[in-house]
Image 1 (cartoon, one colour):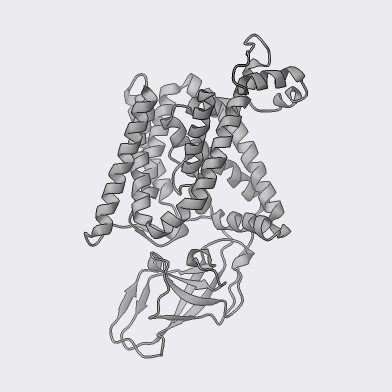
Image 2 (cartoon, helix red, strand yellow):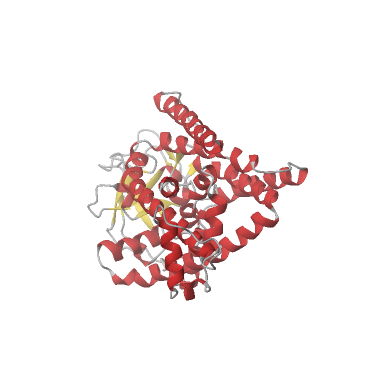
Length: 419
């Protein structure tokens, strides 16, 4: 019973990690020592599993694995599949619990303390790199080379903007509140500002928003400027009519700016829903990323331009019974199912036949992903950019402390896991 509870708790840690932007549940599985077992259990599922569901002997073996004190017949043909499924049931129960806790708590913490929370996650992942690196049996020039190349490639991947099409665009008019010409010029980087609709929601980050296509040069003596903008998410939802974009928002703090006013006189157009095949492929890739330590599936969806689109479709189906997004959600879930079943088999084969190279590759993924967890950034979504802090204040101190705390937490978990 104790081992099953422990596995469920480890699953909860994985689920909580999956709810963290930029952090993979695979990282936590690797830290807690169940990564190989988790991947092997998933890879055991497939068409051959279906006939077992109609065998009484399979359920007897499954119950024996789940109920304390039951005798487990290791010679039974049902022993291995029942063991894997019993393990997955424990882990998945924990993952669902962890995701629920993460969804309820993390958005609040991320909104109130974004730099501190990202620093904590950065410390967690940074310290976690020692886990796969320590598992390499023979550290050769090949493993070092794989580590370096993977780190560089992952960091470059994390720096890419969205390359998906289907983003709506328009031109808005930006003015001063009372039409008074500026007394001094303002240079506003495009990444620091966005224009949003007003749906009456309290959280500005949930509004449909548009970002300038270039930096704003507001000249002294002027009071009116034409600004080309593009939507921050793909889909027809971003084709908003004139008068919809009414808010000027600071992209870093997500607060309204009262020194500028936006007027949308032209409808936004060009927004297209992604093709079904694209949704399917991205679902498969995203779930594969979640199996890999260091890569966040949600980050890849953001880069593919699907994060907001999938989130809005799922939210509409769940909370508003809007069936228009049901097909999209179903296709995405199908991609997830196919992706996790096929990729887990490949990963299991790699761990068995090329263990050291695979571990070096995983360590490189984790190191390269640190770029997406840098605490200080401006902008939102796929347009966010990392910056260095310009002042040394309490936030910077708290951020450094949080990063150190993240390193300490993983170090303790690693020592406990080794014992």
